[in-house]
Amino acid sequence: MREISPTQNWILITIVLATSGVIYDLMFYSNQTPIIGAIFALFIGMPILAFERKVLFRALYRRIQKLPTFAFIITELLIYEILMSIGFACAGLLLWWLGMVKPVSLLDLVIMPFEVFLYALAVCTMLIFVLRVRELLGREVFLSMLISRYRNPVKEERVFLFIDLVDSTAFAEKHGDLRAQQLLSSLFATFAEPVRRHKGMINDYVGDAAIITWPLARGVKNARCVRCIFDILADIDANAAGWRKNYGQVPKLRAALHGGEIITAEIGVDHHKISYFGDTVNTTARLETLCRSLNRSVLISSELARRMDFPDDITCEDLGTHAVKGRGQALGVMALSSRAVTVLNTPAVILHG
Image: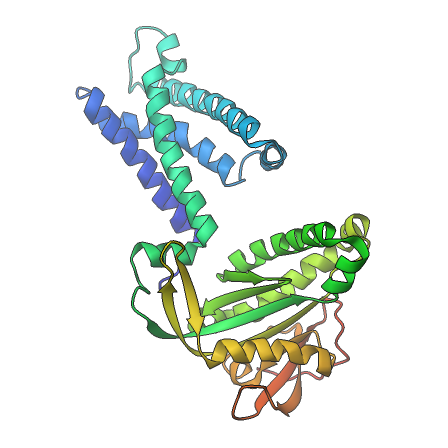
């Protein structure tokens, strides 16, 4: 599936908003140039979408997210009203300054009619709903389900990254299950931005572990799958003081990378999900368990390592071949570490990819 960049994503949203404004003009102002409706729609809708995407007033959005559901909805509607009114006024004044509109009075330019507010609110709500569903399912999963790409099983090649929290059971025994879940929620939240930045997809959370995946060609390009895990580790390292303050310790992770051929299929009736089947998934899980016995934080299969060039700050240690449960032949294993991140690995030798 072709990658959609953040820039392309915003261009698509801009086109949808502008089109909604043109449609409104054609429906209610047939004597008006459609471009005027498009400009009003962009000025009204873009601030709301920027707010929802946490580009605008990020701190405010995080604060209202903590409110009870009813209070959250009311607060968001008030913010929408303010943002839309400001956007409408700015668009009106701009068009008046450019000589594109000639209002009876300036109030017509800066006070948004109620019917315009309802139409704009409906369009923005629908667009935000689609974006929220896409975020809930994952961007790649949402599009795949929309076009029914995996309704019939598909054979493809993918990279998998399994990340597991070390000593989560001990933390839960000491602090309780609720506190352990809060730690996991905070930890998984730190995964989101590095995964998004490196074009990956969080496929699932299983207990204290996360499963991240890429189409193989995308994952090995610029060593994205490797950069992703070390960006996550670097973020945790950089915020070590905050982790100690909030949870009394800095999370330690074990991670494994492997890639190969798998079967992808959409399964379920009431609850649909895209799942991956095959030896590649099982091998990645087994490789992650080797981290403990080999005393390494990040392992990668030799098969996958040979497919990419590692960044200069990544060192790689060849650990030879190891028997993997459920696999007929031994697996070549390498340990990865970064000069920029403090991990549990013992010193490694540099092996150029």
